[in-house]
Length: 279
Image (cartoon, rainbow, N blue to C red):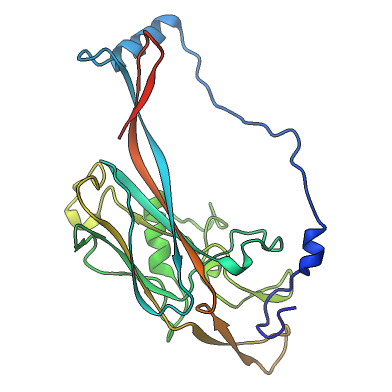
């Protein structure tokens, strides 16, 4: 029982070790398009490069990187991500408390913001945006509106409450939120951050294909608040005497994981069936 923090309870480790599960009959659903042979031949010929005779299909792929954030880290943190592609489209990153990654009670992603104040991307020593992306203000309201809006741009979707009310919400970023279904104050569990790299509003409508990181450095820069955060909440629902709870983000190691989406071309040789990827 995490009574000292006032958050959700967990099974004992001895109970967790006695529980197991098995995945049966997994299925992979694919969406395919069947066309006439003449149409199929026309599409193949249109995609064939006359210079080498290879058939090329443009698509995209993902690559992931991870690093550790040490316990007690406060202030500036820079991570040079070794991504080397010609067209980097978008960046997503999450932070996970390593002390609870094996906890079977956290059925959600358990991505936390770890007191993240703001972040930005620095390419070749120059910041991508004129201003930092503000995540939250410890002295004000935890709305997280700016970082959520940037995430929506990276996803290329619009957050419409009526249409996708559960896609993402400020409550997913807010520590110490009360869950009326469980009756406990729970940590945030879906704090996802992103940065669009394909197009920017401040470039007068110019749409780029993506950022070329082959010959330059790609750095994610983060600013962290001190690990202590006091929040006045009621541990018991309906309690009229709220108390201060102390949240500690810096007392354990966190994994910082980045997801990079980039353009990729698949080249086929119809003569021998060889396939290669071009970045």
